[in-house]
Picture 1 (tube, rainbow, N blue to C red):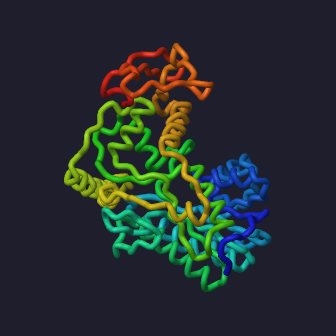
Picture 2 (cartoon, one colour):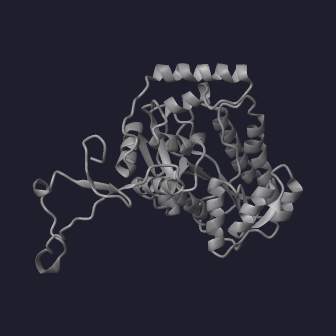
Length: 386
């Protein structure tokens, strides 16, 4: 089994290529001029992959013969496919996809003579105790917050163990919450509801995020620089809920008001949601495991990926503004705020060294902000960025 310094493969196979992260990865691979074969479970997925410039391979993770045939001649497999859900009455399908599906991919890759598998895991597999800033070597707490966390933990373990047994390089990429333009489901839906004033209460917790572009780059770097058998946390920023709310206000002026619910109330709400799920025989996105994850919060240290892979993280402010700008273009969120252009250009510094910047006490206290395409208006305390 090899270490770091593997050459990028001209022919690659991707699972999950029609999804948010997988789609971004397929686009990058195609842009690099690689021949991308991508698994497609549906006719819709075939259309998405063809539009992206990939060669669709119709089938699913349960078809070992399809996987084997598609992987022959490929130097790298990117296994991105997986199920991410909570509050399922029956999690068996998710467990099968996230555990048995991983094993099927690794076995097929080994049989096909693939050099390396880059496995998309999750930062949740670390299983850090509450309040701990998690790293790749953090000891697991010994129990799982959710069925999803359990499935990704067992899937990652299966992937790395099979890699050793079958003699194939497996590198695990463990992203925190992946955010960016193009995502509208999962945690992104909460973000959209928040800036539109549709979330009545919030929870003061910790959340870690990574930009979609950074996560995509991490997968490419794992192919060429990752150490076989290693897992790499990929997380660009950790924020408390009030910090995240302020970033949104600075970007688009919303939410104007944030109310925080006591933790005990959130726990009771999760229990009540579980009862509703049982009574209604429907999957309701509020249950005890969802509130456990929310109240636990997550703080991740993504610095190993910087040191070993050479990954550079985007500033979280840029991620937020790019994401909100895309939401606004889709009609899903308010337009961004931006500072009004100054009417007077500051005098240049001595000998052309640049514009002179007033000392802090000389800067005007009254600032003008405007929405893109709108007229300037005075800032009102508490309503726009501080």
